[in-house]
Image 1 (cartoon, rainbow, N blue to C red):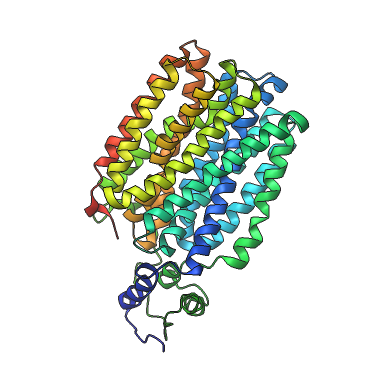
Image 2: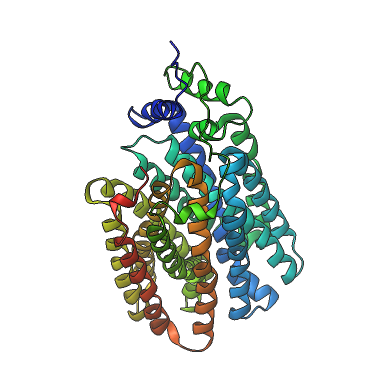
Length: 444
């Protein structure tokens, strides 16, 4: 039996009731798993540069400050992708944006492996970054919109846990393949694996039903009902008239209806979190090698960090249901600051370096990934991808500055101790800003 209503809000209520109030259906789990896999591949694509850095620096005689510029090239692309490409997911749809982004990332990775000069490599990393920046908001939005209310924080945190798993796998593969075949083969393999996800998304990932109802592109009713049938729910008999403002998507809406304050707090938290996060992601294998470890063990330090990131992301999503997401983000960041000071000031052997890197991944990356369920909940459907995209994009400035700052401090002779103490400050600030976001600020 079909649901007959010409009222838009009643149709939204029906869709949300089906998606949010029941157990996770196979289709919902499939969407979350596809997004998880895509983010896992993103982890592979983004951190590969840090795993190849020691070999690349030696082969091309690159100084640390210049290497920081190579790290930041992808981050500049990510910033542009988040700010100027990701918001179009609220116009063309999350699914189309994901297809575009995956294709762009795959091409960028292949061109990275084929680069013959530093400018070519930087350009290829910018292209890769554009795709990564474009895809994150759509993955977080899609996961949030397909998850049940009870499992939403956990699902979005699980999505983000895919990133470190990809990074860990890349670390182990790099330790095996780079000494044998060189750094280029890793980029080529990553590009091919990324492009293999294009048909998976095309054939198996549906569009968000809330987006279809709000924007009403061609065949919207058929596509909505196809999803409802798979969820074993009553289809809609008709498509109600969309609200008058449904065609307007603007960054200005992030600052209307009482959203200005939480938006600025979110942006500040993401900025400070990215500042330290990308310093660690970019430099931890190189730092381990400079500390006297063999190349393969330096790579394992990065892998240990990312394994901790996976653990931390899942742990945060699980315990935040009981203790509150904002409080847990703050707690994780405080623990990350303590771990940073230990890492930079205590002399350790190989085993302790790997253990500390793991704990840092749990606390720093685990806490940081709480920003994505936070941002997805802050904004309504019509501006959700815009909100997530701009949060990531505005914060990416910290991701660009962080590796540069770290490279400068290390090259200037500041030492690991001073450098790591400096990077504890933005972590604590990120946690404090997060605490100021109230439950009443969330859209749903």
